[in-house]
Image (cartoon, rainbow, N blue to C red; front, side, top):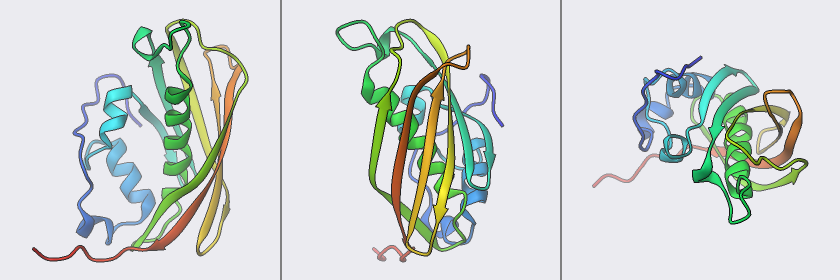
Length: 165
């Protein structure tokens, strides 16, 4: 879907376009650089590599900017990557005019990330209902070792028009 040379613009998504596009169209447009991406994605260097209905894969490359005081990748960085992956997976399942928000998520860390490394987060929707969706994500290193896994619950709701100024 993207590569290291893909350039992205960060910012808020235009509400009027979101209301006319399916979630899959929105996430693909962000991955292709046709819509802005969340600033966090650029700040942390998350890169979309696979986007399909109910499934999203991001890669990232950790380095010393992401370390905690003990010299391992901070859990907040890992949580942000897994949350983003799961949320985008849920977003891909929504019809035009539907939004979502994360109600909760849980992360389990299974292995420390202690050196600059390419990591891969794979997110999948587990359940899609009218008002609630659940998803999971798994984080792997280049040797396919499980580094962390997570689950989320998202609330689904109808988009509302932004007030006129």
